[in-house]
Image 1 (cartoon, rainbow, N blue to C red):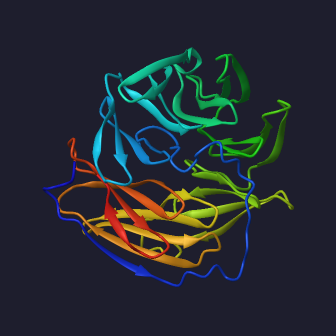
Image 2 (image 1 turned 180 degrees about the vertical axis):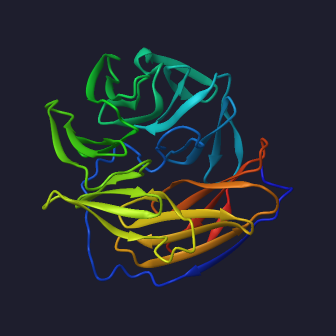
Length: 334
């Protein structure tokens, strides 16, 4: 499924890779891969497995073998696919409000998700034995629910009326929830063990419209356009760390945040431009992807060393390019 009818030229500039002498550690639970969980609707679904990447094309799930580079249909015959994840050694997907576990050419129904049927801007996350769902109800209420992977039993976790968005990020034993509207933002921590919710931040001083959201051992990170904001655990305040668009000459949108790196990109007539900074705002890599014609490109995920750019040709031949943000090397995966 390589792209044959477009020209892809990638120029990479690597700008110093030291982390300012700073050292960080993480207690993030390893039983959930957060790197490819997408926020909202309309993004390609990709999941990182032990020896393959799994991705959605139409109504089928494909597997890209890391060793051979071969791509093949892994499981087919779904309706619309809204989620794809790799958890505890297995592939899971949501199709038509049903959670399935998937193996080669086999899909097994786990349980139905009727509570998700009328939600918009949905996000799905698997973590610590729970399947977590967030979204907006028809009346604009932000809702979060958790399902036991053992029993399928559903429990309401969180609600916020008159919301424009709701985002999830589990970290260790806590599910962090960011929600709000054009007038206020609220950050909460839901303890997955005790079931207790704590409001960490609620203010009109800092609002978001469609934020990207990540949590690390030291802080929570969210974005507004090309600006990156930080919630400081010790002070309980949110402040802007840096802005990719500080020179007012570009239109970068943040597309990913990990422990050490922030990814942003934008498109113009010459192609797609990827910009990587560390979490302190220091430049790391600038990458230009020249695309012929009116072709869409967007950051669609990352792993521990690479950021993935989805190139949509408007046909079934869409492709994913992996750019190593540590040394600047790149390859087209499929």
